[in-house]
Image 1 (cartoon, rainbow, N blue to C red):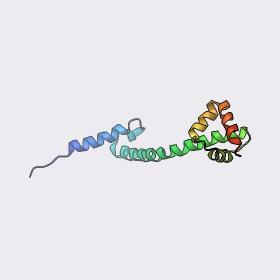
Image 2 (cartoon, one colour):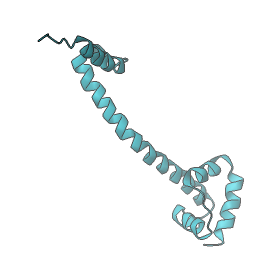
Image 3 (tube, one colour):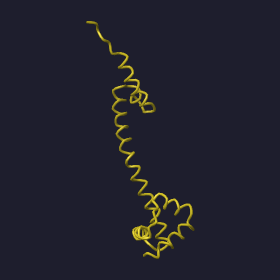
Image 4 (cartoon, rainbow, N blue to C red):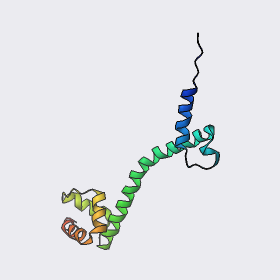
Length: 117
């Protein structure tokens, strides 16, 4: 039986990892064994933070809406409850955008909703 050399596959695998580790400091970008560990850890962070980003943005939107509604004399939870009662379907992202960019429109929305309080 003939001997099978796996050099090309190994080189391809190593090259993929070393390409992904470009920009790392020291041997983490040049030495395969160290780069592999660093790249795998980076992929773990990347996977985790794709989920955390959604959580962080929702927290930001809630803070913005809360700040805008408190300046008008109501807290966030009561405002969201009144929105639901008035059957206005706006998500938190759009509400926060309106509160920051268009305060007069947010005030008119608030006045519309405040009657359900």
